[in-house]
Image (cartoon, rainbow, N blue to C red; front, side, top):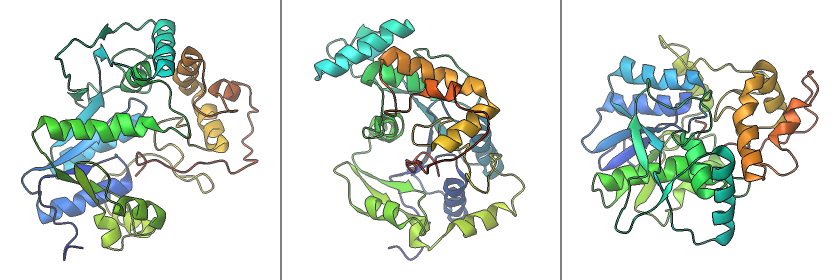
Length: 305
């Protein structure tokens, strides 16, 4: 552990999710001075709430920090090793009317594009080839609760490709996980079999959720997502993330029924649900009254903080 965990030396990337905890960590790093070869990266899945996108923009403008906005994007089909994945993705592309060429010999496409707040994909966008989450499903198939490849493909690998494109052989991955999230901290302490090692400065500094909330209570701007006494910040993550509990999804669908459209359409295109026994179409038929009968929230991926 460094004497000051927020003094980050490059090469490194700050994995900025667009949440309050992640932004708190970014501010502490900025207060020490953003060092050369330290890149602040925000990976937009295309299913982030518009208020999250506004918050990322505001952090960049208010704090004068260049935040690189990245989105998964492939123009060519990969060379499939799995016959099943090849079949499923072909069905998705046919159902959604998406067309891609096969990857030409000798071509190694970046796999991502750089966007801005103005050009970033939105939750209201239809499932097209330029929508990062849709593009990923058309290439790799639909994620589920056991194979959460959405985080891996849309965020982790996009950041890796960014760093490799900028010729870094190795680097440090700075993640906003707090000290009061011990299980998540423990997982990140284990060095991945990758080109990077993880650092968790908030955990090293003993920061808890109370510290984060106290910080934002004093700031001139904040993330506009609402907090419910029972459901927490239920609007965070991708708008109807498969990991959210049934109660959260019901609440969200009550407030915005059209949020179901994308999730329902890609499930039908793949002929497979994100979450077994709970396809998104069922939320069109559930009662209007919010009743959380079971606690079936599956926790959060790294997208949330």
